[in-house]
Image (cartoon, rainbow, N blue to C red):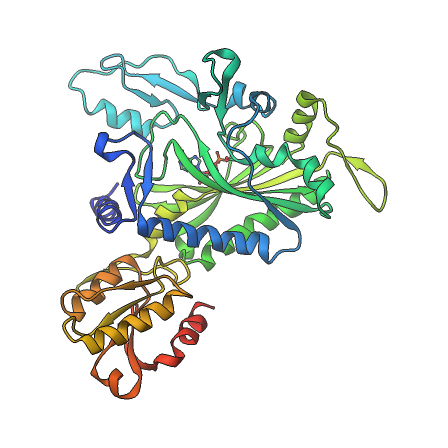
Length: 438
Ligand code: GAP
């Protein structure tokens, strides 16, 4: 990582903690590696991000339905999905200090070698299963052992029959879901990029089992996801596709392509598009002994659909969005988040704190706007400092109530990116923000 990139990453981590976006998990106990807690601003940013995704995937589309499946599943589902046998990373151990690393991440092992004066010898790579185990019920032991889901996907696959029986979906259709996943990552790191508990947002898109259909929908979803990330604020030159070679594909995928982001440490995966074929439905059908065939209502044809999956993390793109939107300019640090993602749409200030008339007028605007938007309030220090404080957390607009407000019922609205100000009537404020958020 270049010094400049390293600095930017450190600034984001510090800002995230200082301003209440993201805290280290269980910090007062010394933390728990690979876990992070979202603070008041982080929770808002994450919600806006997930809502936008849900709106574009489920609300405005006719061909996708949403679900919210359980994190804990019958452990047989994980045998069927292939995760018990094949959801592994290659692990090597340093023979000097017993630290463990992924054998397929040479940059990590090389960095570790530099921490020792002596020559480092490594154990042979072993397969390390990433599923997190838990015990359910009153008896601890093999019978009550379950797995926390390693991907959210299988909540959709095991409900395939329930979904076609209970809705009017017809192939091609998708099942969307957002939720937590857990992985016993050997080396969590790079802040929230790789953690042990994280969120995913996925669509399993079921299509006719046909090579041409498979190719068509795979290309469609690749472009659809790239366009979506560009629409929410990523720069074209910081995103690219990367096809997986046959030896790096997950056990369930016959074709796979990542959308990568130019991270401070180099290009790295943000999300994946996977051609899962009928792997999941076939295996669940076999292990659960339940017929999962789909019957075409027009032709009566029966088949196991193929699944083209789009699988993204939530946390990882959020880290990339923070990096993408952070800038230092005009003597301030600013998060140029898309206004629809920003934790607060606006902040309201009385020009000075000690004038009750101004505070009352500003308080009323604050209360009114809060019925429709997330709005911040600040009355400390001077206006310039308040602007900069809001810039740093990405608030797109600041509303200042001043002496003129008391005369003509207008306020100053200052724009985060241009830093320009304009007078807007109090009565028009809501429409003003609504139009800007379109
Ligand atoms: N259902 C397919 C699947 O889970 P994946 O490539 O293993 O595919 C999809 O994961 C996405 O989930 C990744 O591109 C990344 O955004 C996110 N992700 C995976 N492991 C993660 C981790 N340990 N920490 C944070 N995000 C992770």
